Length: 271
Image (cartoon, rainbow, N blue to C red; front, top):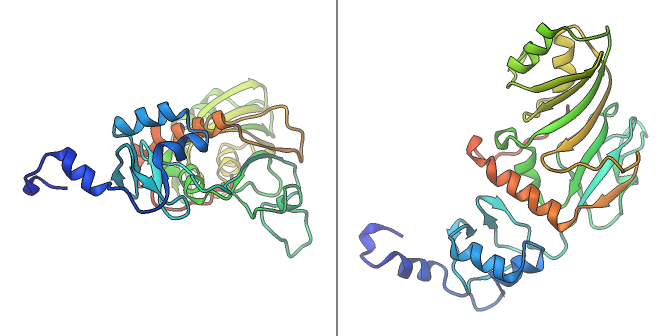
């Protein structure tokens, strides 16, 4: 679409989005995967907030759920019928991998065997808490990549007693690590030696290295939230599916943070 075309924009959009010979109508697909009612989906499309393979969609657009990339406000909407989304309370000692050469237990032993899924980022073997697992690669990459700025919140028990106000300020301002300065963190100390720490980056073992840098190595590390998702009722080793509202909230969170940088890269954080 270009000014040189000479036709009204709506005509150019209509050509760019002409119906395919097969596939479901876009508004029906969005409603079927839980992204609001069909009327809500129609309103989103009419507002120009939905794209298919990078092109602004119009009402009546048909999509191939297996091959087309559908996005709302720049965040991918998984439309394949076999997509699953789990949250798992990972216990300490369980590794985030499909198999382990040292015969340690893996997260795959705690989850359904089908369909095949993968974690959204990683937690090291000693870290506990919320782990998101899915087979929706597009959304997983957007959540995990640090440019999107999806917050990850941790409850951290550190050694050497209460953390001094000056060290808390260092965490809030950024810590110089061997791979560069960290972004400012949100941090509070609800009780001496216990930190509630929120970051949006995902460098390898970042939380542990940040705490070591201020002289308070980590004794215990538990992730409690990723973006808008948390569940304090899950016991260690338990999992459940996301609700439609939770999936939509995550999509909205990713969409709200796409201005932070390139959304195309992959990242695999291990706090």
